[in-house]
Image 1 (cartoon, one colour):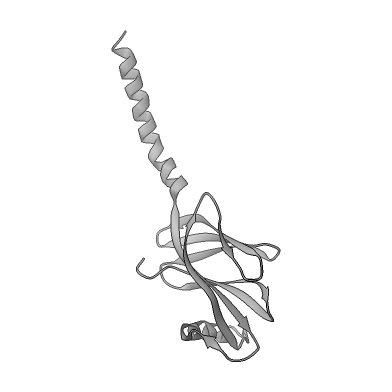
Image 2 (cartoon, helix red, strand yellow):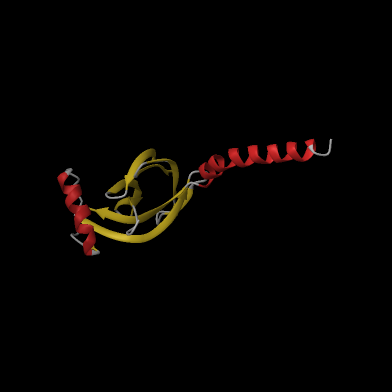
Length: 151
């Protein structure tokens, strides 16, 4: 009888170990995302910093006629699948990001801006996603999402 109990406990422990890793991985799934908040407007022609010229060119190709691009903030955030990560915007709103899934080199993120939009976007190792984030001082806030360098 003594030998059955330790064997039963060992069997339960092994079942727990075999079942735990996938659950733990899913619960801990995280992605680093570079998040910039850019103010775009039709007032002036400022492009600050100069790296935003690429964004301006992209907007022009899509017939968005903004002439001024100014980065207001930049940070690298760890976005998880279990809880949303907030991005504080200068217009007093908090946008939120949540990782929905990872498939190969592509992540699907849910981007929510209260009273504006909730969209799922795909972010690869290269490239950039632009998401409207509300009005601010005569222009529009744009979230610029990309993979941080070196990832």
